[in-house]
Image (cartoon, rainbow, N blue to C red):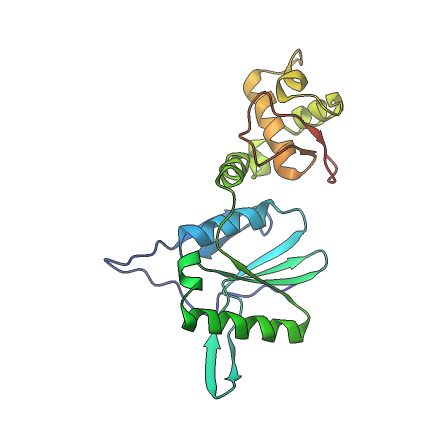
Length: 211
């Protein structure tokens, strides 16, 4: 498992046009840096992904020759997954059309391939999916959830039930029941169609993770 500090700092200065920050991730139980809202969105998805075991920001420098050009590049994220490593660069779609950017990313992809790593250039995702993930992330800290309520709700689920049907009639106050529902979805104990806005009508099914 790769646990390293970022190889470069995220500069903060007056008038800068990007928006760096830190996000607490349940996967690592640490704060992880990002340099833009787009990078933060990719970080949300990595933290929600059950296959991701560890997340490292600005994990290492890549340097070497690309033909006659000497290149040096620090990818945005390294994800350790259940099947290996994924190197991620986050770029807005408009930047991908710039030859200099495209050349660096292509070179990075070739280097990753020589190591047997997956390489991903990410430019965004379904906005509904992102809103849903951010909503579920409100309970990513276990201390905010009643584990007894989580276990009690998990026992009630029958495939195809809605959120409203699972929560109805249970001997828990509505706020506690809703937090348990959200926790089960965040942890992967339950799954639903995340490309549709979450609501009381969302249809639930058992997930791959134990509740």
